[in-house]
Image (cartoon, rainbow, N blue to C red; front, side, top):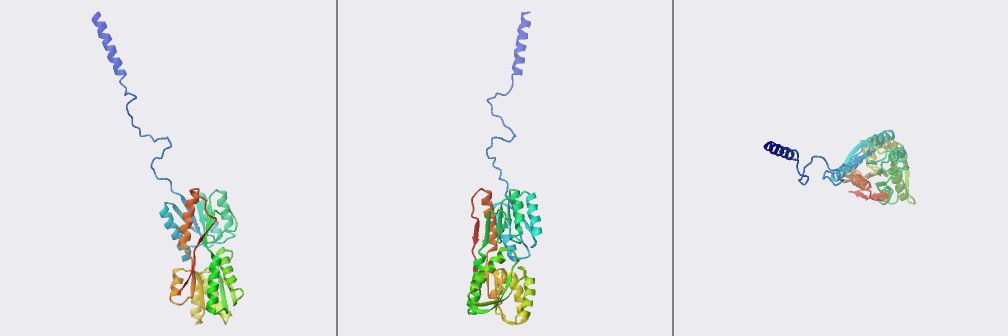
Length: 315
């Protein structure tokens, strides 16, 4: 009997040892579950998404602006969504609404019209999305910053050049840009301020909407109506190049000054067909737009107006 009790006691101790055979809480453990401590995981931060609404991609100047923005976005690791408004404020509004739906972080707008774009800016404001304007300003709405060349100074530069070349007197045609745009208004203001007080007479002033084909047709009509023209100032190179074709066909000798320094215009200047063009830097405008956007999204304070240098290009 005693042997049986000893055997049962030994069996009970063995069972107890097996039941307690768990790993010690002092031993290291591994887990595949993510940490929730709030410490950085080492994964890259989510890219900022920036919308770029351009007035038209049917113009080399704005293609360059887009390219400059894309290059800077690639450099800074941002996603850029580019939408073409086709020079139509209704399409521009639709583009902005599309970007709002996509919940972009910031919208860059190159307005088709400085007045009409106010509704688009207001829509972005309501959605809590910051807005930065490029090249052309917005006359209403809350805009964080405006990036552009000094168009008034550029127009004045063109006017002073024409005064110098014509000896202070002569008959001039002014081809105006899209009515309502700040670029057309400011370039015209600078030009007319420059020639004020001189003996330069503007014999025709007509819009050709920043378009080469319209520049051609408008200039053809002006040439028929005006027997004496010494110079043409066009608010952009596309209109200047259109006017150039009309003047070539007429066989008349008329000096042409444009604005933007697009590749075609600079080539025309170097070949002696155009006298000059005011050089803007559209790629820099686009690049600065993205750069400022990233600073705004980082919470940095930026200037309300960021100017981009310009200069006169002659042969």
